[in-house]
Length: 161
Image 1 (spheres, one colour):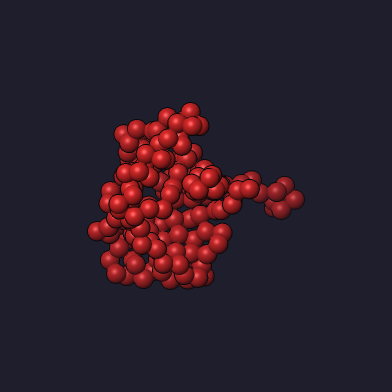
Image 2 (cartoon, rainbow, N blue to C red):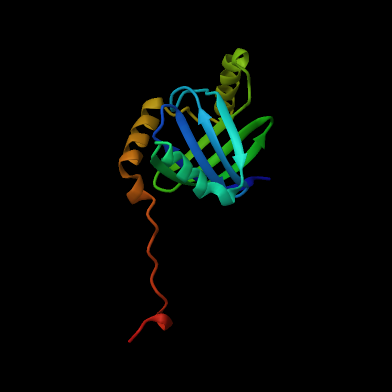
């Protein structure tokens, strides 16, 4: 059975990849080391109450880290024989399949090989990094437009004459 989640993630303009997220289960702040779209990255994560999400955002902005981009994602997460498989639908960005296994630095190469083999089992080719980079650049240039709330029509009975 899938674990279903709705996520709002804010990336900050900071020296390292600093993010906060509010989701269906709470909130967290985390730092990812390395470069965006690297095959593997070390993460440091701290959970906090979702009611404090806006305060955490204000704190980071006050420290000089403005919001760089926001993501709105619907995620289905599966445990696939020890691999965390996430199917994401991100507003304005599209669909992404992410496979994740926890490992230490010594096991990194073997873990990456295992994940690539799992993709091959599904007959899914790995997306070239250039594709992710191009999509990310496009999203970064247009994220405010792509994530704007969709206007809905007012019900007829509530319209003034």
